[in-house]
Length: 369
Ligand code: NAD
Ligand code: AHE
Ligand code: ZN
Image 1: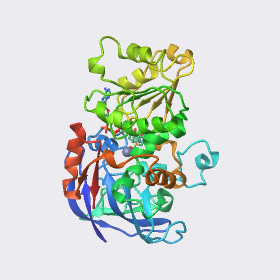
Image 2 (image 1 turned 135 degrees about the vertical axis):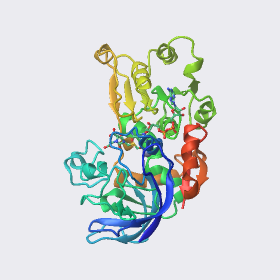
Image 3 (image 1 turned 45 degrees about the vertical axis):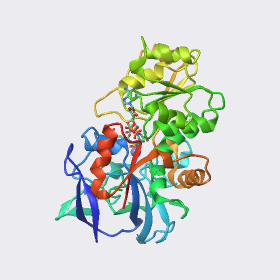
């Protein structure tokens, strides 16, 4: 079949909106009509050539929602008409990682995802006979895409696509980092570095968990109002701090935070986040994705004296199990999404979504097909 898609032919170029060829689903796969997709900073990072796994030409996008239109042989968990959210972190429920119960990092198809192909090693997308790569196993910047059955979460049919697509990455990543990875408890003090599409969801997760101080740190002054809207109790702009940022934050939190979260992808900020943790027990959680070649560092003394450094992918959420529950949280009003969708675009205008992100003007831009 033919489908309209935004194609990245090379790093640091504008996406081209064209009609591409899409092969139907093979055994264990499903064809999904994408109804809406968010634009996450990770899409921009890969498009900018900063992803060590980045492959071109590629159809980016990993934060979508849509409807199953066709299923391949042997598919049992979804049928045509089901509403689904594509999962860049699938859940096979059979691999060592899934069976461990200790992680959401299913390994069933991770290798081929990183190679930009389906689990059988081939791509379903092509243009004028040239192979196009899949992205993070999702490629939601296409009106239709093919996914492995284990990489879709079936969701309720009354959830709007325009907002629930954000649960495919940003919402689940931010809220999940708090409730799954950190397990923030009532009264804990929290610092969130970077108040964008992920960080605001960390804030609302911390509010939901009953955190005491919820401090937001961002170099964009506009993020002060945004943070307050989602539970932040104090805003710190590093550019307005006299002296050392870490010492300032340690002072605000009576010796350091119980939990800090990096939502910037900046390795200098990651160090600040670790060092702003409380001596003896504070834990810093890295959410941000750093540029290829970047490394983190700190004095080992920071860890000897009881600070913990951790990371999280997709908020520690087990996709097929947890994503439908997060959709329920949204539909029941336990978490908010609508105000964070600042821009709704057509596929033809998708490049504008990247411009808005880089200008710091959007929280989430969503493309509606
Ligand atoms: P975003 O662009 O919406 O937000 C980033 C925010 O960080 C902005 O508000 C920006 O002003 C702020 N910032 C930048 N530099 C800063 C600094 N030095 N100090 C303080 N604040 C600073 O991006 P996003 O969509 O929220 O994504 C955030 C990061 O999370 C990205 O690195 C993205 O790739 C990553 N991410 C990771 C996961 C995961 O599963 N681990 C999932 C989604 C996104
Ligand atoms: N390809 C990069 C890694 C990128 C990365 O860490 N991705 C996160 C999700 S970001 C979503 O916006 C993730 O899920 N990581 C776990 C995994 O298995 O990729 C690189 O450095 O190679
Ligand atoms: Zn993302």
